[in-house]
Length: 222
Image (cartoon, rainbow, N blue to C red):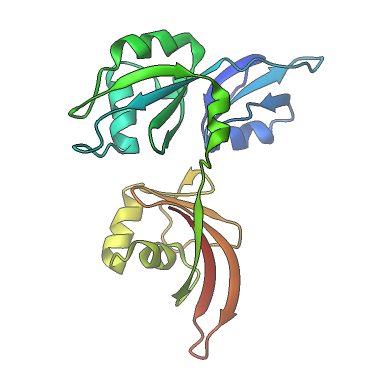
C-alpha cells in the first residue's frame, strides 16, 4: 500500500500495521481503538487537526437494541465509504467517529438504523473521556491447547465444528487482522476480536493443570 503525505482517512488495523513499518514520519489521532487517522509528514513535524467529528445517536432502547453491525450497515447504506467511518462505541448512547467532511451529510440523512428511528447530534470529542470505552472483565478459562479455534470455542461456547466454520467465515481477527488459520498458536498479549462476542486479550498463562491443560487469564469487553 502506498501512503501519501498529509492527512489520511481512517486506517484499518492492517493499514496501521503497514504504516508503522513504512519508515515514514507520522502521528496518529488520540481517539479510536481500532481505526485512527494519521498525518504523514514530509519534513517538519507540527500539531495536527485530525478533523474527526463525534456524532451521538439516541433512540428508544425500550423497543430496540442496536448493535455495531446495524449502525455500520446504516452508514454504508447511505453510500459512505468504510474509510470515512472510525470506531463506533455503544454505551448509554451510540457514538460514531467520522471524518469531519461528511459529518453534516450524516446528520441530515441518518434518520433510521434498522427499524429504529434515531436522533443525532454533534458532540465535542472530549465527551469520550467521560466514560470508559473499553470496559474489560477478567476471568480464567481452561483450554486443552493454545490453538485459536480452541480458545475461540472456550470464549463463545461454540462446538469445535461451529467454531471452525465461524473462523473460516472471517468472523475472527487476531491483533486487528482477519485470521482464518484455525490452528494459529495464540500468545500472551494477543488481542482476539470475535464478531458478536467483542474483544478478548490473553493476559497470562497462569499455569498448566495435572492433565496438561492451560489455565489462561483473559480480559473481555463487557
